[in-house]
Image (cartoon, rainbow, N blue to C red; front, side, top):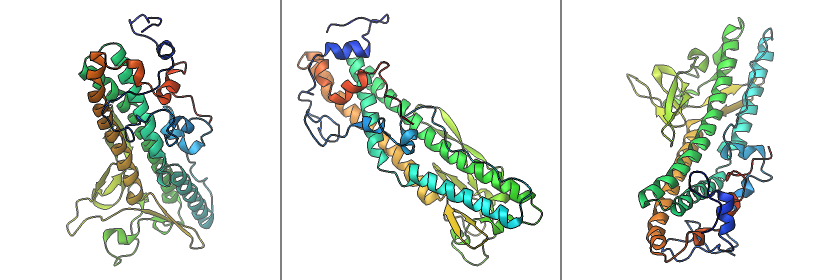
Length: 336
């Protein structure tokens, strides 16, 4: 293969892809063309992950880039009347619930795009390792490490949004606690039926348990991210990655949600384990599936590349070609 050698002896992505000429097919690999994105050129059903990067809305930024920042909230101002404070807390919770829903909870179709971007990242890393004549285990490590790096970015961004949601709850709870004429449990509380009972009323408020504990959640790249735990009685509560039923003498927490009530009786119920935990599980499972798919793909093509049956350039599809032609080999930045 022709191309300008880098100082490390490899070939930079732009030169490598130019040297590949018009080769865009995948050659016979024995792998599944549909699930592993090895469909031949011209397959109109192929999903292009770059549609996520171009013309995307802010809702998808967390799935695309490092350094994404979650929506931050402001504490209610001091000196409000009880009803005005309650209304402010309610409006903030409603806004947060809508923001979380539009970006995470109601946008699980974004996992299709995450799957494609992760697979493309891993496959490019594997192709580069193949081009450098690495061993099969080194090619596999290159592929899975690229997936783990991207996966850690996505999961960390997801957990950032969770942390900011709980930061806001803590700010609101602190103001409620400091107001002489407001009982926090009348404004924000955990519905009593989360304990499998309706016998005692909604007697627990997160205002009793601030500041919330944090739990270290391990990311795919081996690092940990400190994640706040929505907390209730007897050390019970949850993060998106873990539900803790607590240390109860007569049972345990069944689920946990936060409900905020306005002066006129309007309610918003959000930050539910039954919404956040399934999304977290689906995200982590997506990256597991991508890793497994890439290992299968490497196993199928490695021997054929080594024997000369196929060229490395034959493994490049339009998706990898698009990524490798950017200046730094990464995805174009989001417009938002």
